[in-house]
Image (cartoon, rainbow, N blue to C red; front, top):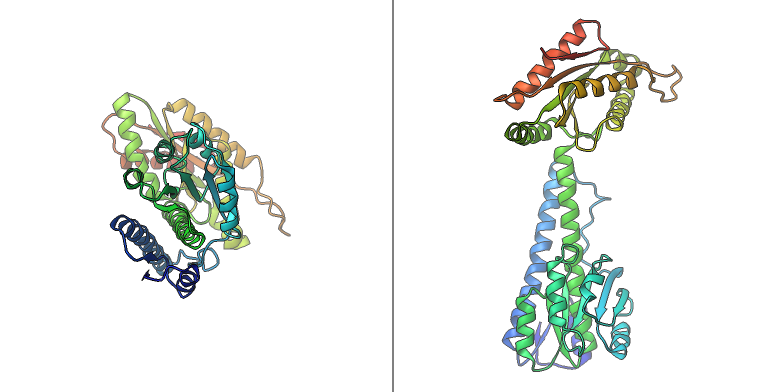
Length: 376
């Protein structure tokens, strides 16, 4: 909204009518560019969030209770104010009453370092502090991973255009000019809080999409697609550095009988518990995946055949010696697992390594099941 009306009541009326921001005539170029850029970024995020929500819904990923597209102003934001003057902080607190949780920091060369300790939704920095370089604080905030994407709003004295231009070039999102108008200040803060919320939601949805695309819904382990993609990279690294890469190919024995006897719901519980036991008995660097049906694969970097065989036997005993108890009226379920072990060779592809482990697995099945066989 561009208006010649400069009374606070006129601005409030415009904002309440639906305007996201306003400029008062005569319009300065710097103010125009800063406001437009900020609002365009906000709109881009809103559009991207809508697109991802639509895509997720079409793929069956979305949950209406989990993803809610909310355009209202956040009231639970966390805001950090960096200013040396306590009375200024008191006025800001009064202006932002009801917007969120406020924290104050009285400047200092380590202000940016201290800001990293908490996840803020907005950081307001005064550029007119005497003993602290506000521009340096903003520069550091943009350099740290924890605060790189947090919106920054600066307060600057009227007429100090050179300082303001430098701040905007550093990546500062918006500004207010002193003496600060309460309604204008509130409008700027709300815009940045909305932008941060949309950015957080996009990041959350991105991770959710990645998780859904790479993990198995029943067991929570990685899926076959992620395993084969990741194995290609790991095998190249292993061959380059002359390291061993071993895999365990596992198959639950007579799993069809479990489904036929107890039902597929219980069968899923068995698969999930089996996955849990795998994760308990492998290292953090190992990658466990559900390969399909009742088949599972564990990829173990820098692991020779004898170590892989030992881990395979530990897993086999963990399954065979401890029944699966789901408090069924039929009692606990006893199952066993057959395992094939294979270790990579020079020039071998991931598909060939998995095929070798698969052949060893079938040898274990043919030998009576509940065994660990190493690929010949």
